[in-house]
Length: 332
Image (cartoon, rainbow, N blue to C red; front, side, top):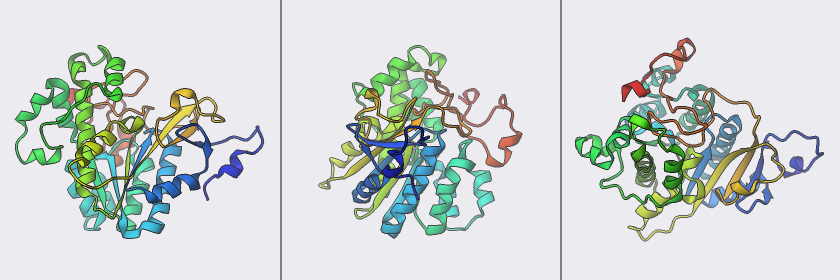
């Protein structure tokens, strides 16, 4: 059973693994979050990619939603690119073995510890799993050339990205902040287009969430927190695309943050999402260095690791840090 509020109000000497707050900074328990999640049409779980508490709660949430939703639950994730959907489908249908899927798919370095339990739960319970993210090579094109670079993509491949032209609002805080943080850090990798590449990722994820969700389904989506914080990023694009319909979506957002103390929510973390999971800053990490933003290929944001997640699980332990892997800067 999950740690509840009753345990969180214990002695001051207790060591809390996490604490959940609502948008206004009030302490709530997991059951309240779950109650609201059950009412939602789309749930965005914003994670820190290297945080074990984020990944554990993701697994617990999918388990608890499945108990009630059954075949009305659908799952998707930023961690899988559109050109991996066929492999995902084959694994979900048990056409191919687990080891074959993990050998051939483009998987993040921490797949085995953090995402495999979620995918395997979907496999065992016949839950559709949607790869929502844009193939990295297309984001890299926009990072170098802007949206005009997408003109070079052939018709067949355009089915793996959001419909063109991409609506872009540079005044949105999430993109303004990204551009400010990057400064000249992007260098030859096109820092002036970094926010456009990020918007393309957000738009693509939003497009495939709406394309695959049926009206009576709950769609649980896992993504880096930056993609859905403040109801921007993917959430903004979902709302934009949904304007073409007469359907009102109930969207729930969850974010994950780290603080020195989890007793109270820092002011800077208020209103990040409908629910904020606050985790001690000294929490142990998984295999990827900490960043809640998912930068486009070839860029590193201040205080964050370079986003080079693509590596075969079965060769991970044999791969030195200096080894060139698919999706590295040298490939772009």
